[in-house]
Length: 172
Image (cartoon, rainbow, N blue to C red):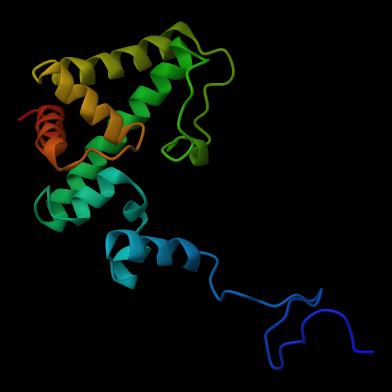
């Protein structure tokens, strides 16, 4: 009788436990998915912002040159961080997105009881951004928040709404 199971792959890289080493880089699955789904080359698919909808809009050239796009991404990052801090204080049950949680790696957590000054600083920062966005139509603000904060696809018909909100946040 023969041995059960399929034949052992000859010359395959293996882990110490004997299982086959399938990928050289852990990110190759993600990179491959970005290449297939968005038609990116390997270099473009490796960029960190390619993993977010707002980053994909920037990489597609909707915000201008690479230098201008980086400024836009910094503005959006500031908005997301301010909104995250505000919602953590005011609505602890609000389901914050894990993918866009920029504060988690910095140790800037507000888990302990913040002082009144810290609370007021967070509220003032968020309110200043919301006041800038007040110049833009309400549906456009919703579309921007969905793209920037919740990382949802905006579709071709809402790209201009996202651009308008970024311009409003920029202060132009």
